[in-house]
Amino acid sequence: MRKSTVAIVGRPNVGKSTIFNRLVGERISIVEDVPGVTRDRIYSQAEWLTTSFNLIDTGGIELGDEPLLVQMREQADVAIREADVIIFIVNGREGITAADEEVAKILYKSNKPVVLAVNKVDNPEMRENVYEFYSLGFGEPYPISGTHGLGLGDMLDDVVGHFPTLESEEKDKDTIYFSLIGRPNVGKSSLVNAILNEERVIVSNIAGTTRDAIDTPFKRDDQDYIIIDTAGMRKRGKIYESTERYSILRALKAIERSDVVLTLIDAEEGIIEQDKKIAGYAHQAGKAIVIVVNKWDTVESDEKAMKEFEEKVRAHFPFLDYAPIVFLSALTKKRTHKLIPEVKRVSENHALRVETNVLNDVVMDAVAMNPTPTMNGKRLKILYTTQVAVKPPAFVVFVNDPELMHFSYERFLENRIRDAFGFEGTPIKIFARRRS
Image 1 (tube, one colour):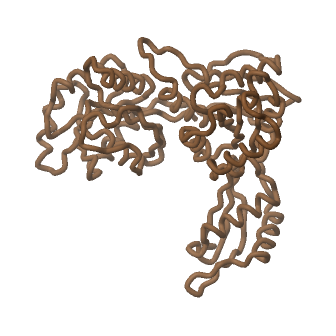
Image 2 (cartoon, one colour):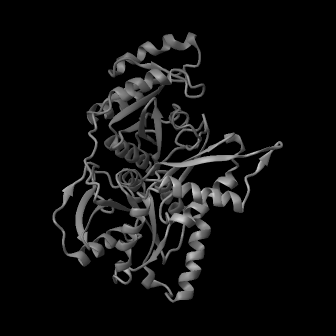
C-alpha cells in the first residue's frame, strides 16, 4: 500500500524543523533560530496511532530574487506537489505577516488539503492569539508548540483524516518486484535498459500506483519480474531542480512496493556518504538487497581490484553485510547476466520459511556451542524459537527474561541461523519474548 505524504510548509523561522523532528521522533533536521537554515527538503517517516506516512520538511517559502531564496521556493513547490496533505505552520507570537499571506496564496493554488497550525503557543494564555489566523482561509487553526509537543495530537487527527483512501495494491505473489535506487548518474536508467534489452520480452509499460514510476514486466526462465523504474527524471512545470533532491522521495515510494532493492554504486566515483543514506532506506524497510557496483568497465577490473573494492563496500556498509555484491557495466552489458539470477535468489531467501523443529535444532546446537550469557548472576535460558513472519524473515525467541538477551548474543544467533538456512540478501529480525 502506498503511504500518504505530508509536507510541512511555511515561511522561514516558524518552527517547521522542530515540528518535523518531534513528529518523526528524532533530531533529523538542523534546528537553529536563524531563518533559512533548512535549505532542502528532508524526508522521513512518521506515524500517528496506526497510520504511518512520509513526512517532508521544507526550506521556508520566502519570495525574493536571491539565488538561495529561489532554490528554497522551488524545493517547497516540489514538496507541495508531492504531498497529499500540507501542514501550514505560522508563528503565534508574531501574528499574521505579509509572508504568511503570500504562502497562503501559493497553497490556495495547490488544491491540496491544508491543515493550519499556529506554532509557539506554549501556554494557555497565548491561545487567544490563534483566532486572527482564521482570516487566512484554511478553517480552524490548531494551536501547537513544537518545542513542548503540545496540541500535535489534534493537528495529526485532522491531517490523517484528509488522507486519500489508498487501495492495497494487488500484487501477483509469483511475480518478483524489484527497484533500482542510488544517487543521480550512477547508471540506473542504463541498467534498466540493459536488463530489458537483453530480455527483449517487454509486454507493456504500466503506470504504477506510485506517481512518476513506471512498472515494466518481463520474464526470464519462466519467472515473472516487474522493474519499478524510478530512474527517469521529469521536468515539473517551471521547476528545474537537481535530480538528487527529487530522487529521495521517489526512491522511498519505490522501496515500499519492492520485494528486492538494487542499490547502485558508481565504481568510477567510488562510495560517498549519500550512497550509505540511500541504502539505509532499503535496509530499514526490511527489503531484500543486492549491492550493484556499476561502471566496472571504467576501472581496473581484475580479480584483485574487485576484491579490494568489495572490501571497501563491506567497510562502508557494515549494516548490509548480508547483501551480495554484483560487479557489472550497464553500458557494455558485461556481467549483467549475473544480476537477475541474484535477484531471484535473494527474493526466495526473503520469503523463506523454516520448519520449527529444524529451527530449534539449529538454535539449541548454537547454544551448546556458545552458552548463553549471564547478567547479575542470572543466566539467559532459551526455551523455544519460532518463525513468525517472512519478507523479511522474523523470529521470536522465547526466553526466561528478555533483558538478559544481549545484542551480541542476538547477533550470534542471527549468524548461526544464516549459516544454517542461507538468508543471503535479506535482513532477518530476532525478537526476545518472555514465555507466558
